[in-house]
Length: 129
Image (cartoon, rainbow, N blue to C red; front, side):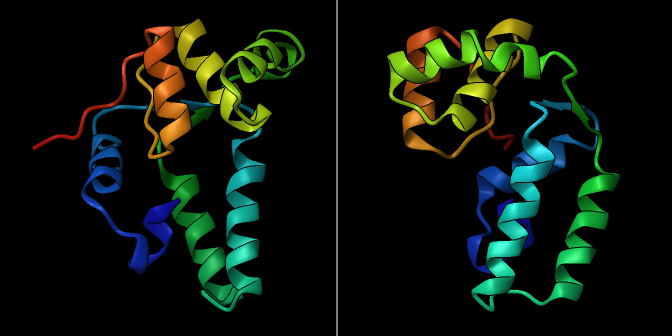
């Protein structure tokens, strides 16, 4: 979501965005709600306008980001176990569970989630030079 905020721009996020020109992303079913909430909170804090939120949603919807249909079933079992054992929020654990289940690299800037991924043997998305 840092793509939507100029003051949060960074090379890693740009690399993830650029990778979506040739790759797809798979996200848990909660991703759309989380993305919407980030924009809503930014509006409430006067960081962006409602028009900028709509533009961000339009741009996000154009990216090859696909929702995992199995995430809801996993949320009440494997995700809960991961959240407990790695002291993650259920939201963050959902991304880790998906990466584990599908054998995918995980793109994150969250330190705790990064550590949990490494402990679980999940590869992290590597920035492109």
